[in-house]
Image 1 (tube, rainbow, N blue to C red):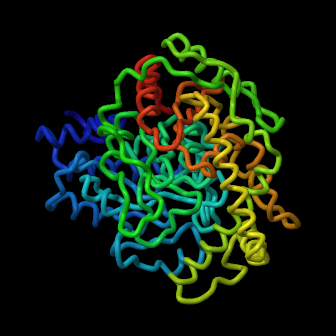
Image 2: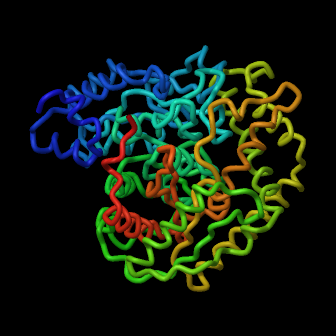
Image 3: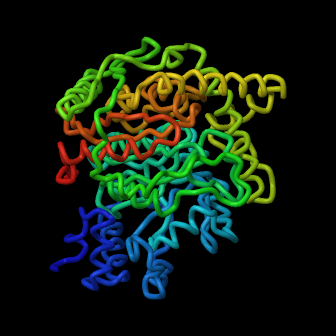
Length: 477
């Protein structure tokens, strides 16, 4: 090889692991190449906010576990993913200043390590992961490598920007309302939100909420390989997805058969949707039909229910309040209003004003929504096809709070993310597939949603689409 940093920049994680397995390069050489790229390229993007380069070199020089990603450089999102001996700030100013050190790994982080991934640091995340852009006060905005005036999405925006820019081939991401799929769409990546209960959130986080975790990647095979490496329950989990019939890696390239696919190419509740997003989803529908699938206009009726947003936000506000309690535990004291971004402070205060009866009623409404949405699949559909977003990536700064309106950014967010939150409430797996770029060269993703527990179907179809219209050669300049 010539310059390893350049030669491996656009390799996916599987290809990089193969280099190590063959003895062509060492884990340390791969890690050094990724560090070189981060140091050279991250300045205008601001994706990697906590850098553990010396630690990563020490790990890569030692006994790296012989897992499927042995020696592959990796980044953790700066949100809830504890890594023993390293700081976790969750995008918050007070935690950034205190830099509390985690005493233990989360279960998922332990599984990342066992797979052979070598973590170089943490990627930028909005405080509490509360908005679909990555512009925390603590670290400033992360920018989209395809157009640095645009957002990379959020809340896994730092992760997606780092992968899209070629710093690392794969990065940790999490999704409570679209936070894997949104940045994957904005940055031209694969982003799979697993089923609720597919991957443990242990040992501390409750699996009964809206969030799940996995990654953003460049290829379907990387996503399948990591899902296979980290899937499964942890000790004490109460929500456990049914195990797959065979390894997820076997689904890549497998024949999905002839599927019945519903198409939703408009805003389900009557809002605006950009022509670029309509073009992307209709093009994907035509491609799926050419591959032998039956595509017809149809979608679950509850998605058109105007009351869904209110139900979802009741749960979301409760998550914000619970998140601030986690931050307080890390600091050893409660946070003050000036240490929390206005959008999150207001949501948390509202959540604390909700009585137990109102919260139980909201939980029951979400449960009913979940059953009604999943019935559409039970009635005979295999997949739902939608745009991932209602707009191309917005400009940086559009979600800033206003002095007299701290929730202005949240309302702006609801304009362009109508398609992802319902499937956090329903618990179903959904994937962003990067099939379309608009005239301005911005990625426009499409979303496929499967029945609960059927990541296998998503991986088969996503790999079929990847083979039909490859995106690996599309890279930002």
